[in-house]
Image (cartoon, rainbow, N blue to C red; front, side):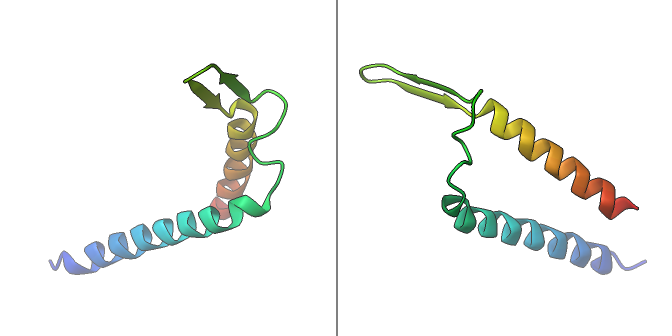
Length: 73
């Protein structure tokens, strides 16, 4: 049994995931509302800044869940 074909599939999948993340990083600044939704937490102090995009994470999770549901069908 040759393990190389399965290793090749894993490398291709990993490459696609990395390429997808790269595309998201390039396109994210073009979406002005992303990260600035109501419900996102931003705390600013003198030398401290804490930001947690709760609502943005929930919306992204819903979109990804729907996409994976469609891909499984």
